[in-house]
Length: 282
Image: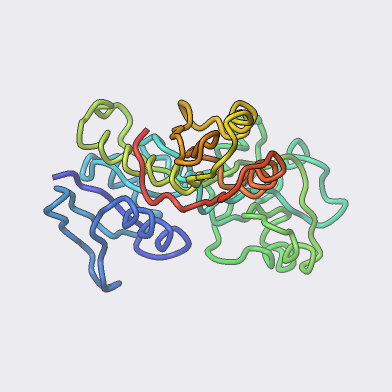
């Protein structure tokens, strides 16, 4: 059986379980369940703390896992990301009181507080900066006010909480993160069970990004209509009972669907419909 680590809580847990369910896998019904066997798909899921998943995978105890790119880097584990999943996106930035520093080059000799010391220590080393890193769990905004550090490093979304604490973001982002599928570095890249799992998740990602669009148009407008809806390979064209009309079916990026519908209508197309795609293989 393929052994897969899944986040048991936090911002990664819900979206990861939802994606696996969409991919056709059985998911746990109770949050207390730590192990779930899906015999139909020959998969065994282990629900673990997100921060521990990279460690288990790197040790070879589990075949693959879902965790954050940030947690993978922070762990220093011998594992690698093999598929970005597009959720739980975040950006890591430095912040400090105005006038303290203008960039990472000014951090020499300072102390930086963070919940992700692995990420910060690596970033400082990569930039040749000699600074101390202190680990704090939870919110780190108060570390400067309480004299624990001169700089903090944390996830920044809108920056509102930092501004409320009298801090400002400085320098370029430390890193950008999202949920990823990981495996042990050097593991068999062609393992058929892993490849099947990845194809299923890729199918979910594509299905979420596209809609199926159907419409009718006059045959003389077909080329212009197809230019608006080229599909992946090409659209499906079928003649209608009414002479001179054809039915067209094509996959269209979901984010563009309303604009494409407007353009098709202006072109003379009618009966324009979009439907969700629940799964696919490309």
